[in-house]
Amino acid sequence: WWVWRLNINTLLFPPLGGRGAKYKQMKFSIKQITWSQIKYPLFAGLTLVYLVIALGFTNRKAAEHRCNHIQIHVLDSAQNMFVEPQDIQQIIKNNKFDILGYPFKSINEYSIELAIKKHPSIDYAQVKSTAKGYLLIDVTQRQPVVRVLNHDGSGYYIDSKGKLMPLSNNYTTRVPVLTGNFVKSFSKYRKQNLTTEKSDSLLRNVFELALALKESPYWLAMTDQLYVDEKGRLCIIPKIGADEIILGQNRNFAKELELLTTFYIEVLPVVGWEKYKTIDIRFNQQIVCS
Image 1 (cartoon, rainbow, N blue to C red):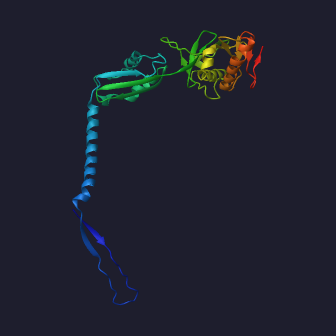
Image 2 (tube, rainbow, N blue to C red):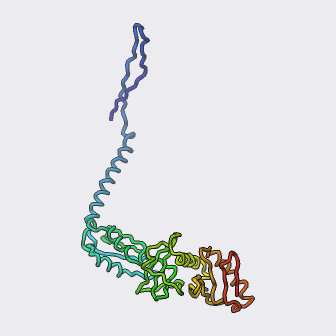
């Protein structure tokens, strides 16, 4: 291995009008590069080329593989059972996806994901293939935090992201239930996001209260149901103690439940569990009992 190296030692420019200007010659030298200097870079370059070729070959082979099995996992089935693997199979069948026996390169995984996500009880779906010929489908379900039962008999869930979710014929989850003299139809509010100020105020308060109850094991266990009274006030119907606990609107429900927990643990056992019919916590840092 040889390289040319230009070694400019000195380049002397003559002064203007001068005589006998001298120029030093440009010197060229030849430097030999030994094997020990190039073997490591050469090896690294050849390895990189090999990996690129091997990866392309592997991807081409993987694309030619055919799907011989569909494996479906409902990742949170221990929490809820709105969706079962056969429901996903039915979605695939209804959309007429060509999967079993077809090469993976012809299977549109993204389209399958979109079709699965249209299920009203599914929050997330991921579809991917394996080198063994499996098509893996992982799904997670939406997580309800409260069940709404309208005065007209209709109902739905509100999920953990503040979206309305239809009831299921297959399964009923254990969450607080809201009843009372009101009708908030699913068709009217199903596209609303209850985390925004533009959403329905009653449903937004119900959603925020449900989140606070979820974070309060004491009151999640103590709550028999949620109720909207004849004056449109949101109330908790507790399992023991008062007949009803009246809540305010647009409040810090988590903080109010902490105050209420202290009252239930330290006050009611002393004065008597049945002493008060109504507990009102609509006033800032105050509990008014009657």
